[in-house]
Length: 220
Ligand SMILES: O=C(CO)[C@H](O)[C@H](O)COP(=O)(O)O
Image 1 (cartoon, protein in one colour):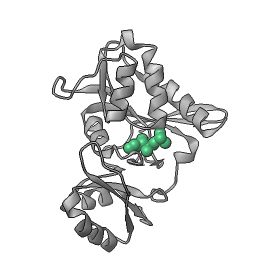
Image 2 (cartoon, rainbow, N blue to C red):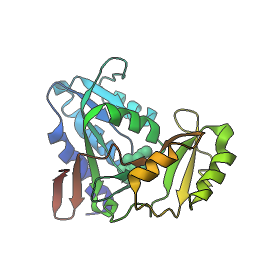
Image 3 (cartoon, helix red, strand yellow):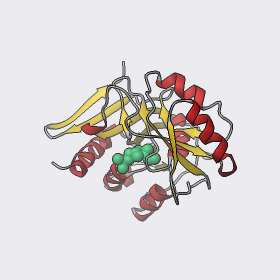
Image 4 (tube, rainbow, N blue to C red):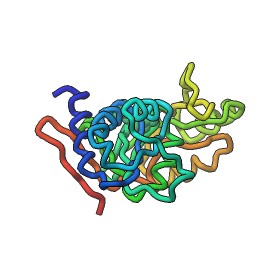
C-alpha cells in the first residue's frame, strides 16, 4: 500500500465514528478529502457538516453535503481531521495545509477529535515537521524575530495566503518536548493568530493506518 492508500484506509475507518443524524466536523487535507468522499455515501444519514476550510467546503458542496456554520449550532459530536505529526500522548502538529486556525476553532466545538493518519505521522517527539503559525501580515517581521528567540528557524511560506487573509510562517528546528507549554507560550506572541500545536485540545481517538490494517487507539 502506498501512502495515499493508507490515508484512504484511515479516512474510511472514520465513517464508523459518525453518529446518525449528527453534524460532522470536517478538517482539511488529502486524508480528509478521502473522508469527505466516503461521507458522501452516507449523506442522507447526517444533518450536515461544519467545514474548516474553503477547500473542504467546496468538496463537501460538490458531494451535496449541506454546510452548517458554527452560528447555527453549539456543539459537534465528532470532528475528523488529519495531522502532520501526532505523538503518543495525542498532541499534534497541524497546519501543513494552512487551515490551522479554522481547524482549531471547529475542533474546540467538538466533543471528540478523531485523527486519521498513515503510520508515518506517529512520532516520539513533535518537531521534525516544521511548526506552522498563522500571522497577521503587518506583524510578520516582528513575529519572525520572536520565533527565532524560541530557538527555531522561521521561514515565510512564499505565495501562500490563508482563508483568513493572513500569512503562514513555518518554524523549523524546534525541539518540542513540552507541546502544551510551547502552545501556550506561542499564543502570547502578538501578531500570531494561531500556532499549529494541538496539544491542549489534542486528539481523543487516533485511527492509524499501516499496511496490515487500521488500528483504533483511544486516549485514556
Ligand atoms: O493540518 C492540516 C491542514 O491544515 C492537515 O490535517 C495536515 O496537513 C495533514 O494533511 P494530509 O492529510 O494532506 O497529510
